[in-house]
Image (cartoon, rainbow, N blue to C red):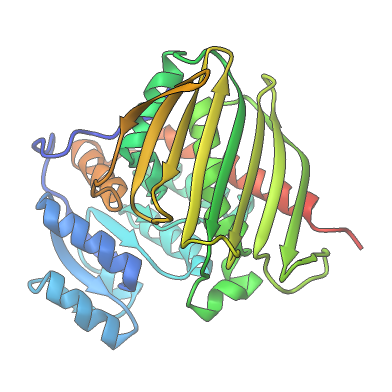
Length: 347
């Protein structure tokens, strides 16, 4: 299965104009709401949040939308799709309820806190024959689309090594991120999920094995009995075809800048690199390397953060049915589970 390319921006919808609901209107929910509203490709019928202040801010973006307060009220409306941007622990139940009601779902990552939860949501989408998407937004940057194209053409030969990093010099500002039963984990499931997803999406390996891993909290190696979440994680993975993946991610690292985001892919005929510019969370460039020379593939600026949501919307308009590509989400969740198991020192 080749990496999925996003549909062209600005192209007309291939099908009908979907009617959408939004559940969760925090910062990221409002960002995706704004992206979809700006695309003018859907009718934002209703928005819901238990927080009145968040709802008030969201209403300014779509003043004609009906204001609701919970999922029950949303599912009483005749919706084509639901965008979910709530705390992680709520995602599986909310997504499954919507799918069983015949409503397509676009959910913030992670879809579930572990492989079991993700599997249940994917199964619900399959049983209901409804489109399921997750906001794994880095796939939709121009840089990664160009890298996917070159890896697919084998421009650098067979990829045998990947070095993937995502370090955030800050940390989440919501308390639930630091409670394992609510979040599923710390920086690994928050940031490392993107790295694992990109590796699986680009390489399409038949299998991945965790060779070693380590999880830390405040500089101390974590044990399986720990109730805290990790703020630093490293892992080495091996694909069945022989490729090695090294990944590292963190919160509040003394990085000397806001963020370090860098992904490097090495083949026998060249290399590809995606990296942030000047410590930015939003500005990226990509390069192709040959020996000591390097050519730029793309540079900032670009408005990419809402592109995954708009792409899901376009696919929904064309065909609201189940897309087997979402089964990759289960594979990535299993890899994350394996890293957690290998990285926590067993008692």
